[in-house]
Amino acid sequence: MRDIQTDQKPILVILAAGMASRYGSAKQVESFGPFGEKIIDYSIYDAIRAGFGKVVFVIREEFTEVMKNNVGDKLPDTVEVDYVYQNFDLSKFGVERIVERQKPWGTGHAVMSAEEAVDRPFCVINADDFYGYDAFQKMADFLNERASDQEMALVGFEVGNTLSDFGYVSRGVCEVNETDHLQSVTERTNIYRKNEHILYVQQEQETVLPSKTRVSMNFWGFTPKIFEVARTLFPIFVEQNYGNPKAEFFIPDLPDYMVKQGLANFSVLPTGAKWFGVTYREDKEQVQESIKRLIDAGHYPQRLWRVKKVVDESIYLDF
Image (cartoon, rainbow, N blue to C red; front, side, top):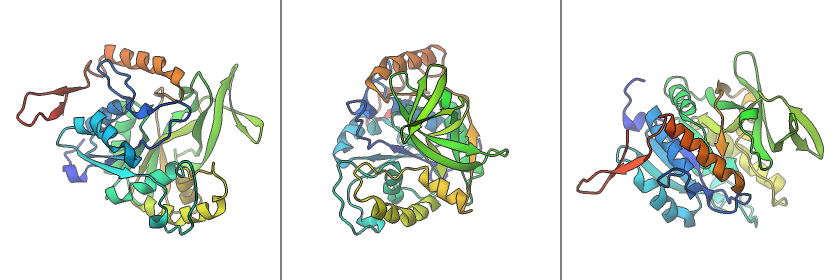
């Protein structure tokens, strides 16, 4: 990849404000690697190797010190780090109505919360999903070479490679054309394996999904144009759903709208990589074993970060 100035490198936006209701704890800072590494550490490590120059954490404000102490403060000085907050104040998004809710408005709302820290092409990921280096390199290349307000992207995983053995998962199910461009994406919140089939449930009706169906794992490549679209759609969504405490403004709602309105194309960057994550507490042992196999195969060092004996006690990547 060509040499790019740090302030021109793409930005990695990490969604880490989730309530972790199914997992039962703050899984964003749960340890999975041999020296206490979190899944988020491996994502950042891969992103920096791929050429990202800034990391933005979208978190709850009360989680700031925990995220800094466990993750952010370990990053090298060459990487800019910022923290933004997803909260219940919707006035900055043009919403005047006051809505009482137990949790914020979903992943699309989380992305909107990052606008103040984003000034160039950026990638959005979940804090608790392990994607692998291939996905970050493909997205970095896209953002550096092809991204524009008319051409954005997502990494499309095969749904059969993204399931948990311990319950249902939520995925953005993609319809992709012959040129690998997104035609539509629909959030499905109840996907699971049953015998030989992969199914999703909607209105109590089971529908089969082929195992190679491309799905979004919230690995999106955007330009700041996405914020303009979100500011248009979000107030409408809130007005239509203010009485539904479970309503969520999902990221896929934005590209789906843009594609159907002819505002932008979205390239679906393919990967056959096997995702793993911690939707449920029972997933933890499998994730630890998967990371160990990758370390044993030489994809990651035993200790992901190391401390050098320098005056300011800075922490550097162990490349």
